[in-house]
Length: 387
Image (cartoon, rainbow, N blue to C red; front, side, top):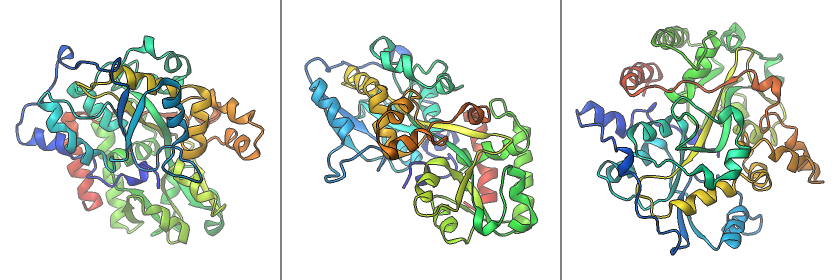
């Protein structure tokens, strides 16, 4: 099960929105108050919180994580790795009391989706990283992911893995190709289409289907999408809104086409080669889930070293071969291509892991929903979805 497919959430209405709605101050932390005492030099440990199934494991012993074990062997830094993040809002709610009260969270490194990372960055709850200590990040980070609107220059975040929100469909059962978002609304797909229920996961692709530049979309663009989807719901064209359960619907044929994540489809294709993934002609959303160092983390230097470890092309290639998402280190492609292993070489040619130039031309990182917009937009979207 993928990270993105676990996002069932509340369309982004989590603890941050609740705080704003109750009139609680924003709890912004000034830059000078974010750093804690760094114990890295004397305490060779690190606490790393991640999503389940989001790191390579040994085939014979799933408690072993080869890329993480290699880091510990090389640096002498032991990593306490926990798979405690199952939902962005839930995790935000878990650690926000500490962060807003200027307390240490017990974690040196966390991974959340970029729309949630934007919230942490706006609140001043994560530390700026020392790029001088991260030469691999500086050299190898995918240029297309280097400067999202919420964190220009990627000063506070580094992508762990990336991915694409596009269209998946069953080509054999549908009997034709899909190349456009608009084709989801064709008459032969009535009642056989699903959309993602999460606001942050769904809105960008739908806007792109309307020809909107999602790097600079407006409130009018959002409401235009909502009006269109409301009409489709009334017509019973959309079967339902889903979390990760679109995977089952697509596999069984109950659904013929849907919004989907690239990593999910790669996994589905191993069992059902009739499933296709499409980056539509109008474009698709490129997203990332990013590493961040929370305020007052006690092992900041160790955390920065671990991040840089994963930006070595050889390490990034090993991780990409296991998780099958868009690799944020394009140089890892050559490592897989030259591996001498037929399966790994095939992954190097997969545009859903290493997008080619033609595909990249249709990918965009959407402007984030601002804190001022979120309550209004989530309320309208959730009324459509039925949350």
